[in-house]
Image (cartoon, rainbow, N blue to C red):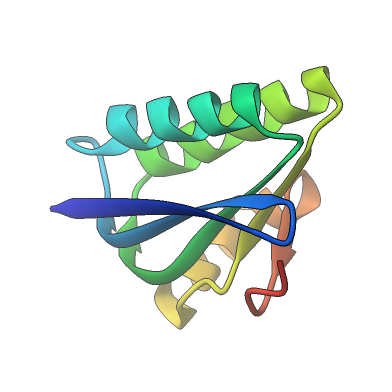
Length: 105
């Protein structure tokens, strides 16, 4: 199960995720990220509460990152947990998405 919250801080729209970004929740994650990208010039995905991410979750992040790039918006993934960071590293996500260790937005 995944829960999301959003806030705006220092010009960034921050989408915070708690729980699992898996096949069941990836559509909701993608929809929230795409809406944020469409409405804001800078979007950060706060992963500090994300316990798990599947390939479907990775796809949601990639879709949002591509939409941000097309729009000329900033997009970052922040504060991944060690288990989520390991998936990011194994998938090569860090080569195409700005991943920050902390939430510096």
